[in-house]
Length: 244
Length: 244
DNA sequence: CGACTTCTTGAGGAGACTCAAGGGTGGTGG
DNA sequence: CCACCACCCTTGAGTCTCCTCAAGAAGTCG
Image (cartoon, rainbow over all chains, first blue to last red):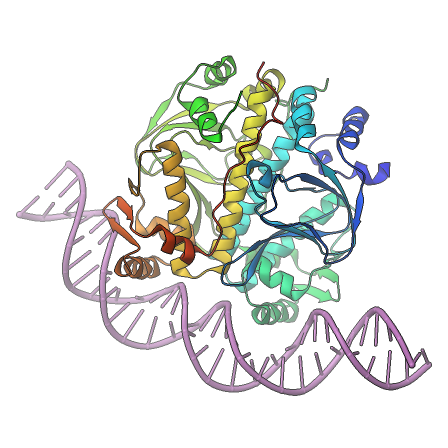
């Protein structure tokens, strides 16, 4: 179990001390299993909580009155789910499992204690949230100002970067448990057009996508198509509070 | 101590009763004036900082390789600018003034001390960031899954809610210093299509927009057109750390 | 009043959508 | 172990929203 916990994303910015990790585990409830497709938390639910995704992939979606939905983000193991809704009376988005997933729930009170007792950890939580904001900003730019192929390219690049962070040895071939329907709802396209745009990417030799195995064949081309500059995380974090 | 969200925001940037706030204010540099159109901080700049917008409106934009740009957000007085880029090596977005603006710069070190010494204020900063994430998520849903009129409706509603928070007496008529070009870059539309969609909103008696004065004539219709449920901020924030 | 910016409208074109139907693929049970 | 079913992918055809190009009208500021 400790191995699972070690992947929690706080490690992205700074090595996590054992004490920090222990504290995180203490905050969380007992991990619970969810089947593929299961809803973890519904849009509109009261008193939103935070969740730690220990294994599996999940996604977050917002309902559109007309009947459709927008997928906001997919979550990888180690991600923190549900933070945005902490600011709201009711959850802003639905969380559901894309694959079988193991998830631990965290009560807001634990986050309050974290800010009180572990300023460094709290600051890391804050930083991760800022990183997520950048990702959302980039998705807005991608959806708002690039064509279908560009949106898919941008999405693939973000996924690739995130998978690489979780598993630095992943290389250019990795598993993506997303259906074309999901890609459509992530990019704001129709599933038919996603299919056609993927075919183009395939025919142009940019990616190979067979089943759930995605291979990036031409990273430079993907970046060019995405039309948005890749981001690099801060390395100078000397301004963070020292560990206690 | 019962903090409504609104007072927090006002407290944070108008009144200065709290010692914690005094610290943040002390850490801020001397406020600087920017003319309309002036760039506050450019995308790609190293060692990103945070900024306090004391008066005026600004906006944040991301460049698209093809030549266009996406406006991510407009900022109103009292807003914190530049937080997302704190997670990055280089600023993710360009900040520029929509009107003459007064802005104070804050060094990341001050934020570090804030987390160390003022857990309650740090937690509020965290919460504000989560609220911003929800706004971004809603914009993604709006841009990705609604038509031109819906995107404009959603944008107008968000602006209205934010103006109301800053000035609860504003009512349904308020000043919006945005050109149609800005609306286009905010919604991911062309300026021509923005013009036509605004005309439709006008002809349907939903809004009146003359010069910089925007009047909402039919709030219910706007909400229906936007196709995204309005959000309500959390009122139970008892989990926040107590003030020191 | 003149120059510049911003808004408005027209016309034609393209990217993406909807509707619809056929083809793979994998899982399950007889 | 094969057959069937459900789910997912693929492709075609026609349509519509939104885009681009272009030019003139209205507004704004020195």
